Length: 560
Image 1: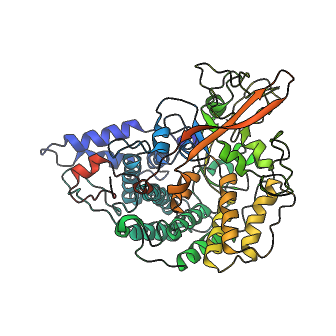
Image 2: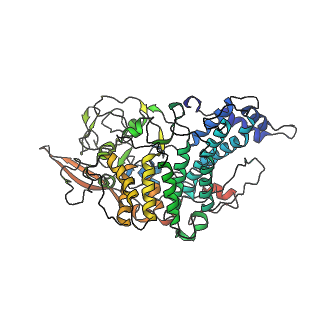
Image 3: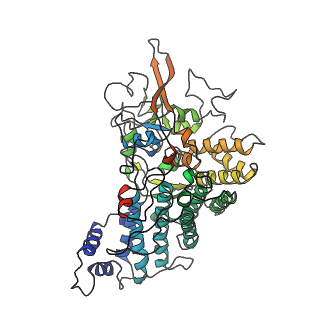
């Protein structure tokens, strides 16, 4: 698939220009002639149609340093930007944005993707594709299902930001059409995405896929998307009791425990495929393309971009964009499964980085961590925290996750950096959360899902105490999500959907201040690094001001 994924700029230019330059003298509109070339009625191989479809994949979400050069997680309590100017991500963290300047505005991007998928969906049947899947599904049905999957994912990305958004169906709007389309309700959007996943799941590629199709959506990808959207729909922000009585746009008007049940069943459907399993080594999930945990990903590159952008500044190259917070570091407990504050955990504040949760060492670069054949120095005036005007860690920590095995090498080398959008560990945690919330107390299936994550992490013992209450298990699940899914763009949305952001994202964040004494002894203390700010209106992003101005039926989100 990789050789086909590139921007067909000539298509975009021709279609847009044709639509805007159409003459009344033309017997056949030029844009229709262009589409006739793309969706050629004589091309049984569908060469141009396939390229058009694969171009649509470029609208898929990207991860990593995508928000003004920073991770979205730097707008949460998990990290801050090392850039000390008023960056885009800092505006998100401190709430200093408006409807005319929202730093993560994706409205135009995803509606452009939806338009392109609609063009494909309404025209692909003109192409006389030959061939079928092993289950008998014709290739044109497979391709159409792929386009519908992408469209459903684009809608989900809009809904989680803005609440209910306009649903366009399969219609491809043209100049002159009435575009004053009102927002659909949150409930209708969730139903559309969920129903679409059900309708297309058996027309998509079956799991597992071979290496040539690794970036194409499969049945499991459809099931995983459905599970995620239903988990969001069941969560406190949406499931009754929304802000400012705005349920008609952003949630349901009542609470229903059955929404948790639907979410649990959707996640269980992925588990019951018996295709996926947790990769034994946590770090390998992100740097090994063909693995048993990966469900769906956007193609990235074979490069050293993450290392260059986020690596320690004492290495060359290393720009240290991301500074994980002390709050996230402290969320990673000890190798014995206990929190650092628990009696008997073995935590030593004078030597704080020993015997930690094994995921700690694959998530952070910390003082004395091995990297590029040396020890990281994040003590004051150390090689990786030299002071001065050079961009460097503001917390004494750097990001390690997603990077290759460079502890004992002298330089970085290229390796895969795909954007993993769905993986099996999330499905297990989705199931555990939904099932726990649905029941009066966690059953064995909840324990099994959470303990599978902890076992793979290398905790010893990984088992949880028996007889936990729903509330106690909820706390564990939330913390496991924070650790396991760190920097994968979940924390920003999780805290919002849990409706906890007014507390969790409204506090001072901290880093470590480490001094190396003349004797060689290190001292550690916490230091404030950023005051977060969050108000109720920030649970939902503002609809772009330009959209509200040009669409008389577009209702802005509350207080924006």
